[in-house]
Image (cartoon, rainbow, N blue to C red; front, side, top):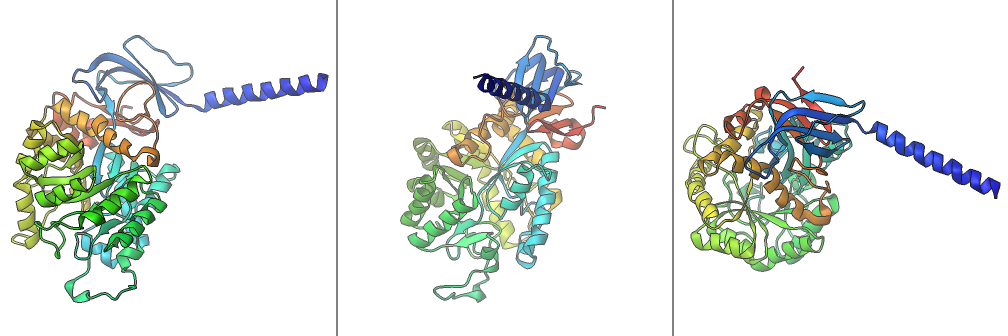
Length: 446
C-alpha cells in the first residue's frame, strides 16, 4: 500500500513538473499600447493590450496587463491586426513564368517556390489558399518549422479536361493513346488531365490522398493558356458532379477556375461551392450564386500597370486579359448588390516583382469597399472560406481575428490602415512586426 501511494505521489509530481515545464516553454508576448483592428469590426479597440501565449492569443484587453518573464513589446500607438490572407495564390507559380515550369526539374521549381513562400510571409500574408501546383513538400517543411513561409491550404494538381485550361500540351502533341503515359507536368503533380467520370474520380482522389484541403477543377477557358477560348464551358455536368461528390465524400469542397457566365453556371449546377474569378458573370448568375450560397473569389483584375498577368502587347493572351478585366467592375457591383460571399485573392504569378504587389492589389479594393471592409475580407472573411475544408483543414482553430483563443497570426502596422489603406501596399516599410503561429519573423521596432 505504501509503495502504491509512493508511486502515485511520484506520478503526480512528474505530471505537475511536466505541466510546469510546458507552461515555462510556452513563450509569452505582451503587446502594449496598440490600437487593434480585430478583423471583424469597423472601429479599432483603442489603447489595448494583447497577450500571446505560445501560438494562441490569450488575452485582449483595454485594462493594464502584465506577464511574468514574458516579452513586452510597446506598440507605440500603432495598429495591431490579423495577418493578411490570399484566397487565390500559386506558391509554385509566383516567382517563375508559366512556360518555365515545363522546362525545369522539380527540384529547381521547389526551391523557387520556397523562395516565393518566404517572400509571401514577409509581405504580411500569413495564410494562402494555394489553387494549383505541387506545393505539398513546401507546405510540410514550413509546418515543421524548418523553413519560413505562410500557412498553406493546398489543392495539388489542377484537374482539367483534354484541351482545358490545365492542359499544357501544344496541338502538335496530340492525339494521345489510350492507356496513356503521364505527361511531365502530371508526373510532377502539377496538373491532371482527366476525361470522363472514372478518370475525374481517380484524379480527385489522388489529390486528396496527397493531402489536398480542397480540390481545384478547371471549369472554363483561361487567359494564359493557348488551347481554350474564354467562352467555353469545360467538363460536362456528370464529370463536374463527380469531382464535387468525391470531394464531399472527404468532407471538403471544389473550387473552379471560371471567368465566363456559362462556365460559372455549369459549375454551380453541379454543386461547386467556390467560384474562382467570375469576372464575366451576368446578373442572373449572380442571383444563382446567392441562391446556391456559394463563394465568389474575385480578383481586382484591371488593365493597368499592375495587371496580374502581364502579356506582350497585341498577343492573344493580352486580348483575353482585357476581355476579363472589362468585367471586373460589373462583377464587384453585382457581388455587392446581391450581398454575395466574396473572398479576396490575387492570382499573382510569373515573376517576383509581380507577386510582390499582393498588398497593392488588395488596396485596389477600395474602389468598391471601405478600407475596413477590405481588411475584413483579407482576414476573417477569407478564413470563413478556408474553414470549408472541414476535417481536411490543416490548421484547426480560429484564425483571421484578434480574439482570445485565436491562433496568433499578427501584424503591427506603422499607422492606421483603416484611414490610409495604402500602408499595406508597402509592407517592407509599414509592417514593423510580423508574427505567425506565435513566432516573430520580423521586428524592426528596436
